[in-house]
Structures are given as structure tokens and as C-alpha cells.
Length: 204
Length: 223
Image 1 (tube, helix red, strand yellow):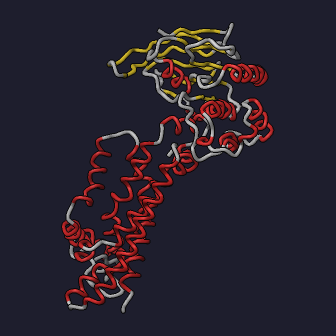
Image 2 (cartoon, helix red, strand yellow):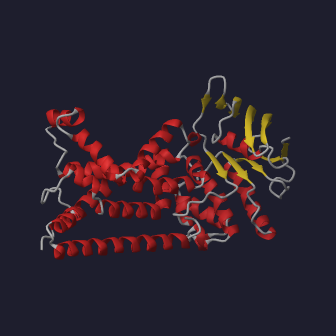
Image 3 (cartoon, chains in turn yellow, orange):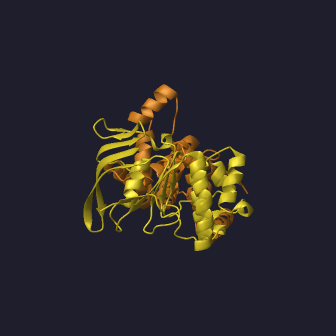
């Protein structure tokens, strides 16, 4: 289980909101976070990742404590072994598709496998600016998987993909998740083939 | 025609720019992160040479470097270092004088990089140092070129500060701008014209190169 019991004040345009989350997500499963805009879905994802520090509370991944407000302990983001797909992709403009993946792993067979999953094998030498929006989003997903994470956090990961491509990608991703025992938490307003029949956590 | 002042100017500009690249980039990065009161003060101090008359800066540096006073005395006694009327002194003065030209463009570039890009690198297990060199630095290259070129050009044209602390020693502190002044003083307009033309040409090339660099940068939507 990923146990989450945290509090965080979020400042936004309309002043601020108090984010209180107490829940648990299944390991080796897919959970979708849903809820209205501005409720703190991205913030919650980033707190699980260790990119934003909760004000207080506890986050545990299995038996591993990732955050403990009482002891003001926070496990370094670098040591959590996660993958993160950012809403704005956050690609590195200076790196080619290949270099993005090599930044995460030395395993060239695995890189080939990822490129096949994302249907990007022909685009290895391209820089992000030479990719379409959908290709950039696929690269963001592949890069997040490159480090072989045990937890994959995705923020609106399929928003720029057309339906046919999305279905093919999700199909291959599902196999990979099962094979590599990857736990997935994603933020999405819409149900997709990935999280159909899986867990939904409604925020707000 | 004595070309030594031109070489001295170029040497001073090259040394100053190299040292400022090493000092300026980390400081710019530090300043571009979360704003604090200390950083506000630091940034104001770094920006001061931009608006301060060079003679004011030169005057205080002269006092500071003087072997009769605190810092200058200490340097003289302990390191046997004399900064007034020496090339070394010019380098230190130029570094202070050109600080904003190096730091300001680089700082702006760092703060325009998306935060998630940096976070993406951390998530992939990379340390701050690794992220700095592999992700952040390569993506602000055009700004670093611009900053280096501006620093170089600015140091090349330095006059007031040099006059205050360097004086006019041939081969040591007589840089091109001083040589022009000197030539005019003794009515040698031909020499003054030569120095002026050479400085003009170098500066022109430098400004052109800034434009070229920036144009290439604008072409790419990611920079």
C-alpha cells in the first residue's frame, strides 16, 4: 500500500485552499486521481514524488517511510525510485530522444523496448523541438519509465494523443506495468483504457 | 605605432571574462533560485557598477587597494601583493566593474527555465550538480555567450576605473582607452585615431556576434 495522510496549504489565485488527504493506494495497481480543477491533484502527485513538501503528516510506500512530518523527515526525491510524467512534459531541449532515455538507463535493450512501445524508434536522433506534441508527450512517458521506477506518477499523460495511438500505447504500457511490477498513480479528468476497472480516488 | 595598449586591453578583457564565467554562472544560478533578503541585497550590490560613475568605484577601489590602508596593507604585508597601479589590480577592478554584465543575462536565463525540467532530472535520480551541468547549463548556452561577449566588450572599453587605480604605465596598465586619452593629450591625433578605430572595429564585431547568437536562439522555441 501507499499510505497517505497529509495536510498542505496551497496558495492559488483565489487565495488558498487546505488540502487534506487520507487514503491508501494499492501497490502493483493503477489508481486514477479525479476531481475539479485547482483542487490539488498535481500538488498531491508532487508530494508523493517528494517535489513538494507537505506541511505535516505521513507518506509510506509499502514499509518505506517517504515523509514523516513529526520527525521532519523527507526521503530525497532522487532516492524514491519513481517516474514522473509532467503535464508540460518537461523535456530537455538539449537532448535527443535517445539521450533522454540514456539519461535514465544504460540498458540499451530496454531503451529499444521503450522506443518500440512509444513507436518512436525512427525518431531517436530528434530533439524535442523536432517532435510533434503527441511525440513529445510519448517521450515524456518513456523517459519516466527509463529509470525502471517502482512507482509511476503521471499528470494528464495522454492529453495530446489521438484515440487510436492512445489505445495501442496503453495496451503496451499495461503489459509493461504488469511485467515490471510498476505501481501507477495518474491524474486525469477522463477515464481511459488504462484505468478502466481500476481504482479511482476523488479529490474534493 | 605601438600596439601594446590594444593587446593589453584584449588580454585584460579575456582574463576578466574567463574569471567572471567561473564566478558569475554559479552566482547567477544562486540568485535565480528562491528570493531571499540576502539575495536582494547581493543582487543590488552586483548591479551597482551599472549605475555608479566609474570614478566613484575606482576611487573606493583605490582606497581599498592602497598599501597604506586595511585590505591593501594586509595584502601587501602577508601576500606581498600590490594591486594599485598593477595589471592584477586592473583585473580585480574589471571583475567588479563587469559583474552585472555577466550575471544579469545568465540569471534571467536560469529563471526562465521551467522548474519541471529541473524536477524531471531529480526524479530520474540525478543530483543537483549533475542536473546543473547536464540539463540547466546546456539549455542557457546562448545567454552565456551573450553575457561573455558583453563582458568582454565592456571590459575592453573601460576607462574611468582603470584611470583611477591603474594609472598609465606602459605595458602594465596603459590599456587602449587610456592610450587614446594619452595620445589626445599630447596632440598625437593619428595614434589616437588608430587606437579608436581598432576599438571601434572590435566592438562592432562583438555587437554583431551578439545579434547573430540571439537570432539563432530565437529560432528555437525551447530557448
